[in-house]
Length: 351
Image (cartoon, rainbow, N blue to C red):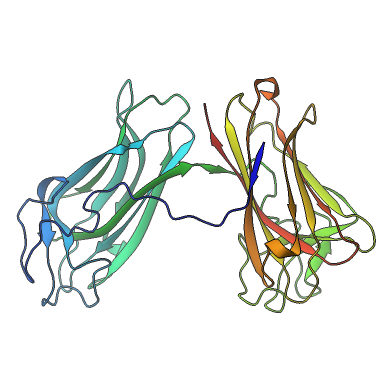
């Protein structure tokens, strides 16, 4: 069993010529049906420097791609398709000043056996963009467990024959184990706190609790940024002279352990600005045999006051635990203070 504490890491981008800087053009120049590293049809590169096509700088670099009732695609030979992994593509689409917009479809495919299949797609029309500027979009999808070895490829294609143009820039593709929410009430949005009466309520739906445990709707006094990791509420544990704990078991209809897989449970722990932090013991066990899977002790030295910090517990599941679920528990280690919990998610890497 391994336990780790992490912050968010930037994913690798698997797209070649993602900023459309090749072929390199002079200001105002346009390439006809050539975009380095992309297969094209009625698509090319534009260097809009010195023109009035856009009222703002382009998203990255000095060049953009354009589609004129066309198509552009790229295979990602260095991106391995793994069941249970999520692929995410972000990209910026622009409409020129006083130019008609040509609707496009953005799609990610996978060339798996027995046939290629669509992972995710999105249609973008004139109502989704604004003249003279770029708008960022994101689409994502996950390979099914039955997917076999293959390659991802991205396709941008015009949806209709048009006199207009669609401009494209900053295409980024990353892949990581898909995040799932197998614990019910993982964002602690129920019960709903009536903030006109108070900022908290005792009790947490779908969780077993002991001691002073409940739901908090944080204020800017407690968290100056006014933001929590997910939704509007978080769970709080306040020992008040005795141990407070909360535990939850994964929903069996959503989650069953597989022997040999690596699981990672991520969660956010908050340290209020207006109260002492209460150290926590976090344990993960199998749901039937109560076999220890991972643990983590979180102290005041691990968190920042007025903020939430992300933590992770990772472990490779033994074959004997196949078919069981997970039980996650938080217990206080101090007699006083408070700690807050939010956004509990699980990712999986299958053998």
